Length: 145
Image (cartoon, rainbow, N blue to C red; front, side):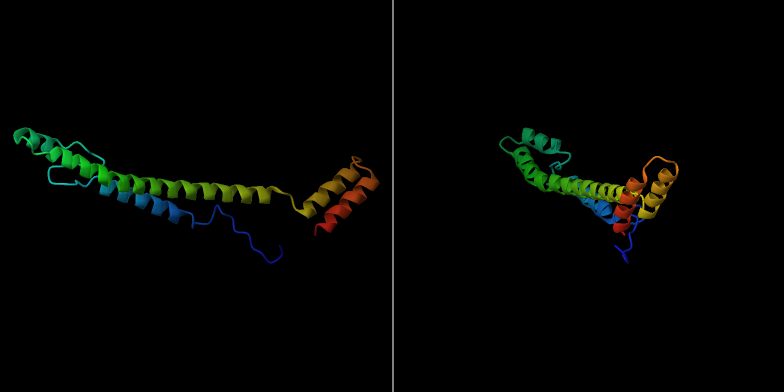
């Protein structure tokens, strides 16, 4: 691993862009979902079409409300797909960010070989391990270099 530089993912800012894009897609879905599907109709996110229902009540056989609700149903699927896609983008970016931080933290939590050798020497000086065990563990650590 000599010559490779590890960047701390907590200081990198590239993870922000997928979150921003996800929010933008969700907001676009909401804006599109609030648009009326007809002059007397509601929208996919606010479906009641009172004006069309009143128009039907005043003109028998008009079927304006039925047509409005059919258009609302057709427009609802793309709206909810946009909103869901945005939420999935945000959640995916957050999960990737958390995994990257956890991997970096786990990798940096492993003590270096030098510190492990120092700890081994301290335990040998304190009489906690035998000479044979000290030599064997030190050789194993030096082989890792």
